Length: 363
Image 1: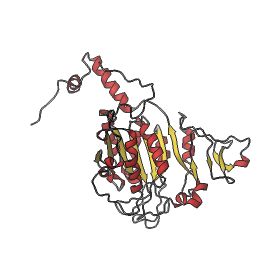
Image 2: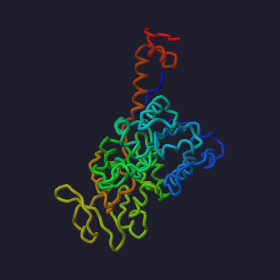
Image 3: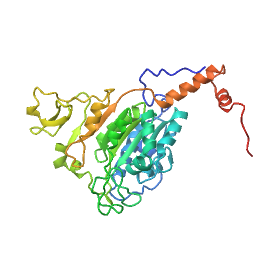
Image 4: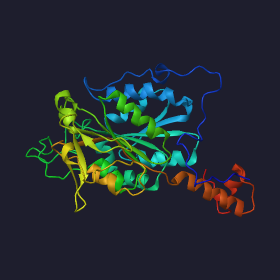
């Protein structure tokens, strides 16, 4: 008989995945680096993300054969070629669906999705939101450069209004998606944002996402030097980023800037939030960040601080909560059905249950 999963107990996203054998030397970045030539444009932010992932994966202590990267179509989707793990360069927008099947059928795998703002939010929009709402145990890295890079410079679902591209010569008229807001609206249990050029922050967020059990989405601001160069320069420039970046720290007040110009986020009587000078915040309801709040309302409000002006750009983990995952629930349901049928919960019995008597052999 199979052992039922205790769905009420918080579990790591890596709980069922085999680790390195005892006594084996730790793996290195080199072991996770494939022999394929990395082919992105010079200066592309993808290089920095790839280096961070290759350097971070050994720290998980997992066997390489139990790690899978699935990608769709786009510049970022070349990612699986450059990692010496299992991987699949799949079809446009459908990586979350393929990853769902893998995570559901193979609990011994750490399943990652690498996608871009076009791949994930245009043709892949429905696949993304349903993977998030189902809370499939996968980690999704969404590279956002606010442009289509592989097809050479068309506007994307995250391009700002007025963006002039080959497909919008008079400027984009579309209202862009905010990927973090979208993920929170889809009830994702882990939502974060980081940046390609901040190695320490990127690595820290990746670790938390990998350890989370459930659907984790990490938006990564990533520069495209050819078709949208400098899209994030305001928050990368050392002279301006301190005033603009809002670093989310669980359990601490939400603030921006440094002394003596520090500003804190306060809640207004009408429920909205606004930044005020720290000296003026005395006696006012200062917003304290709680990533573990089961109600996503406050996290959603934080996600709306970001706009095209980049006056205030929150970075970090917006939400990190626990609820049963789709893949755990499916496996529990199958085990219950097999046991209810009075058969041993083994592979042969499951195969018999699923096939029934109405089968055909086509030669």
